[in-house]
Image 1 (spheres, rainbow, N blue to C red):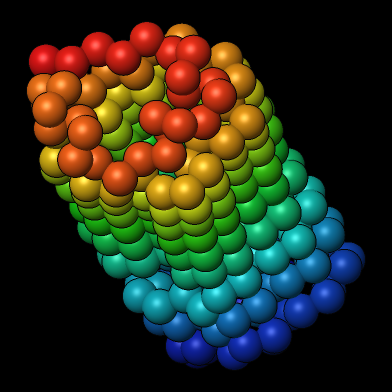
Image 2 (tube, one colour):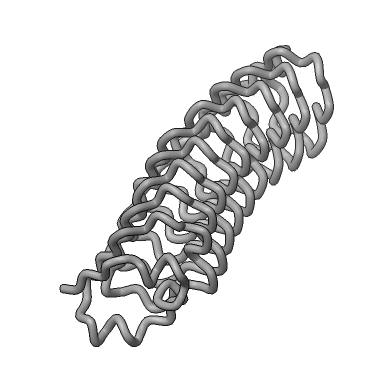
Amino acid sequence: YEIPDTVTVISAYAFDNCQYLGGVTIPDSVNTIGAFAFRNCKKLTSIVIPDSVKKLGGGVFNMCNYLESATLPSGLTSIPAELFYNCGSLKSIMIPDGVTEIGYSAFYGCNKFTEIVIPDSVTEIKDRAFENCYRLETVKFGKNLKEIYSHAFEDCTELKSIVFPEGFIKDNQETFAYCRKVQTVFIPSTAKYLGHKSFYGCSNITDVYYAGTEIEWQNIVCTLKEEPHGSRAKFHFN
């Protein structure tokens, strides 16, 4: 379906539950796509959102189970909540430079992802953003990331290493819970708080590298020190 070039706004729920919509062309005239506009369009396999789009609502492609490829507009400043929630066929995504926040459950259940690159512009990753991306092996965090919220990478069971960037401050409850293949964790000296059960169920952690001194480590709020898998790991200090 080709949207006419007289359209500037695709309203919330505009194509919601159009289960036989196999393709759609969005013209450069569009600047806004409302919440859940293409939710549950089960036959949609690819989408290109033009750079003219400056605002995306939450859940625009929620439950588009057969969506394999998506291109986001270069001027986007945030990834809204549930944007690609349970898009289990989406193979990869390029998050544009300029995005500062990745929203709640934005990529929940995108279980074809194997690698995610977080651009340097991102400062926050919200709750459950990448939860249940169970084929995700590698996450490359940008250098300006400051906080990761609860359950953001829970059940990413193929993730093998976690490297927080220098400047990182805080993660929250069960952020990496049940990431069972994680073996190494790298923590910068800027970290102040690693939340309750942040690494719960990460039973294969062997080494934790902290960029500060052992004395500085004692001042960090971190349950990894007390949890059984943490107590088995070897801690390395600067």
